[in-house]
Amino acid sequence: MARMNTTVARLTCDEPTARRLVAYLGEIFGADDTGCAAFEDDRGQWQVAIHFRDPPDEAGLRAQVALVAGENAAASLRIEPVAAADWVKQSLAGLPPVRAGRFLVHGAHDRARIRPNDISIEIEAALAFGTGHHGTTRGCLLALDDLAKRRRPARVLDLGTGSGVLAIAAAKMLRARVTASDIDRVAVEAARGNTRLNRAGAAITFARAAGVNARAITRGAPYDLIFANILLGPLLRLAVPLSRLAGPSVRIVLSGLLPAHANAVLAIYRAQGLMLERRFPLEGWVTLVLKRPLRAQHLWKSDKCPGPASK
Figure 1 (spheres, rainbow, N blue to C red):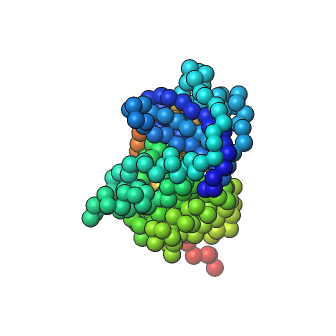
Figure 2 (tube, one colour):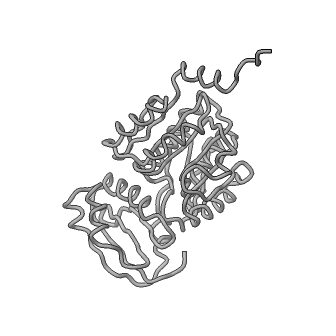
Figure 3 (spheres, rainbow, N blue to C red):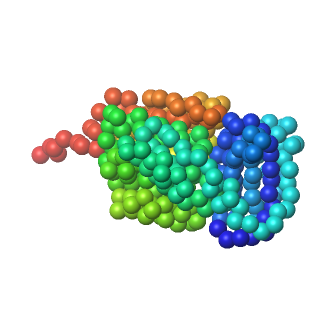
């Protein structure tokens, strides 16, 4: 990302709050003119920094912070201009690698830490979000690692791919065909770059799309595994469309959720014939793994594969 004059909002808090805030705000403000980072400073305190090309709506920003971290944190948020700097790279270059099951998500500076049995995913330091350091992405990686011990999905959808971490992880671990989409043009291009960096490009098809109606997405259905690491509102709105893209033995991994949101999401997906298989609570977030009940699998197959027509 180019050097630029920016406005920065800063907050000092505990580590779980910092990670929740960056995961949430990275989705809310995840664009080419905004970036979020959480890091531990030299005094051992956790800092959240949200950088904006243009001054943000202060009241709106504080309201978003209050939603995740409370009113006191929102009131403590400091918003100030900063001099030009490659701030995303500065913030993220020192982040440690992240382990999630057999996966290691890391930057170029940590290649030496890769172990012989690791599934390595290298993400460029210039990205502002989706690096695997958030509980939402780590929860999805843990869910994938767990599922891969019992299943080998052949068709995978990564909705809201961000930096492409989950798409790359699925392509590497499962040797599957992956369709990855995002509403943000910059995110799609960043994910393409990371896919090339990780030599997974041949297995992944990208689409820039809002929702699931893009031709590249519908053409890949029915899917055996679907990731939707987004936000509560889109997850609720997409329950019906996602269920239509799902195969009989599908697993749908939903993340970007606070624990208080889980029951509302489960209720609307249950109405589409999907049930909870497992939860992955992590760093104040929860990842849900859904499946079709066995009876619903049989009904799906019967509907898709009718008997011979009568003469």
